[in-house]
Length: 227
Ligand SMILES: Cc1cc2nc3c(=O)[nH]c(=O)nc-3n(C[C@H](O)[C@H](O)[C@H](O)COP(=O)(O)O)c2cc1C
Image: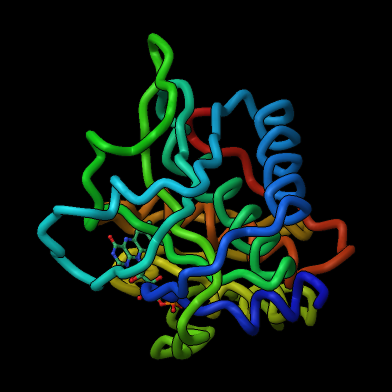
């Protein structure tokens, strides 16, 4: 399975079977987390054979069962934290899918006190990604139209359309997809969140999808206002 096939196959899965992750799968996930941490300065950690975080909570939405493994998205506090954890967390989600696993982003339905991870001074824990062998493959979320999520004043180039097609398939909190991708001059794309809880995490996830969809085309991201 290549990464675009992973984008197509991925749906949130909340029920997991009782099957341990093979050692080579754990190594591959750990290597991905370590590579990301080195590149980004995040402190993402994988927890395996750990059930506590998903036990004894009041499900606010989504009903999880059998979760034994997860990734804790920890990193330095700061204005970019949410977007970065979205971008890099989705890289782990798609890696997991390519390794034959299923996943679900989790913001609300977990007992954060019981998440097994180290949080250093000046760091915080954001979302969690549940992963393992799903009892099902999930279902395709209700899809928006490309024009709902972008602004293009010129003829839409193929690479931008392909980027947007990958964005349409991105997971987002309560499937809100509160963002816009704006095509500017000189192959520049500005991606902005249009607000709401976790919308910056969603934005980072969607940016990663866009890059995969656009493939090798050398577009540029517009500078963020805080840059
Ligand atoms: C940042 C974020 C937080 C999420 N939090 C939860 C959650 O707490 N509980 C849950 O059941 N699903 C959660 N989800 C999963 C979304 O409900 C799901 O991605 C969305 O409905 C789209 O469906 P799909 O992932 O199958 O494409 C979250 C997704 C994202 C991106």
